[in-house]
Each structure stands twice: as structure tokens, then as C-alpha cells.
Amino acid sequence: MTTTTTIVTGGDQRSTRRTRRIEPISYVFLLPALILFTLAITVPGIIGILFSLTDSIGIGDWEFIGFTNYVAAFSDPAILTSFLFTFGFALVTVVVVNAIALLLAVGLTSRIRFTVALRAVFVIPMVVSGIIIAYVFQFLFQNSVPAFGSALGIPFLESSILANPDLAWIGIVVVTAWQAIPGTLLIYIAGLLSIPGEVYEAADIDGASKRQQLLRITLPLVAGYVVINVILGFKNFLNAYDIIVGLTNGGPGTATRSISMTIIRGFQTGDYAYQMATATLFFIVTIVIAVLQLSVTRGRSAL
Image 1: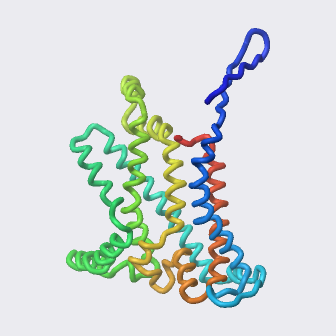
Image 2 (image 1 turned 135 degrees about the horizontal axis):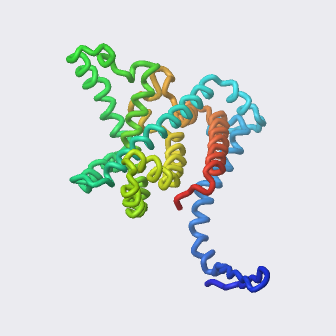
Image 3 (image 1 turned 60 degrees about the vertical axis):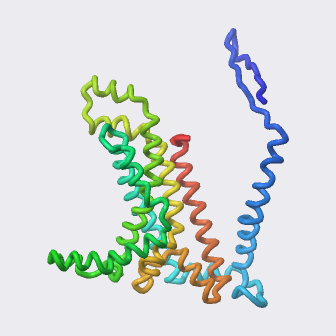
């Protein structure tokens, strides 16, 4: 239900502002979802934060020890390395995924043959489990690629990059991007299809080249969709786990161990309270990054 309010601003000028009144029944429909979210997310999160202030190993007795776990986490090289790898991996993957997806979206919305069939092919990775994709690519990196490199006499490809501590992250980025590009691609296609065709027709009449149309028309008009994909992608890549487990299991050594892997390994080895402190720090850092992203991109959303 809406109500109309007339505001007199001076002279004969009037402005009409409509205000929407929320029906009380709306809160009734909202209540079940709110209860489920509270029980499944909020309450466990609060309990986890409380346990991060204890010496609990997950079972048995425990005592409050204050911020001891947090102080230890800040000085733990394994935790710091995991944070560094996770954020570096997420940043590189976001750039790769969005660059490739945008170029593919431009191509798949242009006037080429078999556009519908190509769109169907490109979204196939979305429906495949991440762990299955990881095991398939692990076989390729460890067997097919080295055999291919040996046959062509390319020393760089004769050994698996997953066994190289300095290069293993590249394989993880490649596989993660391969799975993430389809979802990003669909969002970009929706953004490109929302651009009126008359804009490009006017640009053609003015003599603008395809490159100029891409830089001066397409990119500014899909900027909101870029914002959406960057925020969603960065959030998802920070939580990377299954693909890393399937490809390298955090190795060689701990070179590709993400913060999620570090936390879960800690739970398995009895460092429950300590890793809850790490998880809480990770949560705080993620919230800070999300707030910064939203503040920087405010007003540019496509929604």
C-alpha cells in the first residue's frame, strides 16, 4: 500500500513524494527465514567467537584465556602465510575471471553464428562439482601436460607445475577461473543485453570503431555489473577450499594452503579454540573488505 504526500517548495512549485507503508503481515512471512538464519548462522557464529576466548580442544573441559589465541595467531607464520596466499590468489583470480568473462560476453552477444550453442557450451563448468574438476585437472597437470611438453621438447612443461612451490598457485588460478567464468559470463551477458541497440547505431553513424565503442560505450554501461562480479567473485575466492584440496591439498608443503584449509586442519588436530580465533579474524577482515568495496563502488550498482 502506498500513500501520497504533497510537499510545497515555494511559489506554485509542488513535488509529490510517494511513501510505501509496509504491511504488518510482511513481518510474519519474514519471521521463518529470520529464525532459520539466526539458528544456522548467527548463534553458531557467536558461540564460535566465545570459544575463541577459551582453551577448548573441541571436547571436554575448557577455561577462558582471553585474547591469548588472537595474540598467538598474529605471530604464527603459518596463519600469516595462509592469509597472504588467500588474498593474493583471490585478487589475481578476480582479475583473470572478469577480464576473460567480459571478453567472452562481448563475443557471445555480437552477431556471430551459433551464439546460443556457444553460450550453452561455456556454462557447462557451472554444473560440475569443484572437487571433480580439481581431480580431472590434477591428472592433466601431472600426466598429460608433462607428456605434451616432452613430446614437443619444451622443458618448462615437462614437469607438473603443481609440484613446484613457486608455480602451483598458477594451476589453482587456472582451474578456479575455468569454473568461475561461466557464472560471471552470464551476468555480463545480461548487462550487455540491457544496453539499447540504438546507442551502438548512433555510434556507427558517428564513425566510432568497435574498439572505441567497447571503451566509450560498453565498459561504462556495464560498470555496475563489473562491480557485482568483483564483489561476488572476491567473496567466493576468499573461501577457496575444494579445488585447492583436489589439486594440491595445500602443497607442495604449505605453499598453496588457504586460510579455510588452515582453519579446517586445525579443527581436525584439536586446535579448536585457536582456529576459531583465526576464523574470527578472517571474518573481521572479510567484513572490512566488503565495507570498503561497497563504499568505493557506492552509486555504481547495476541493481
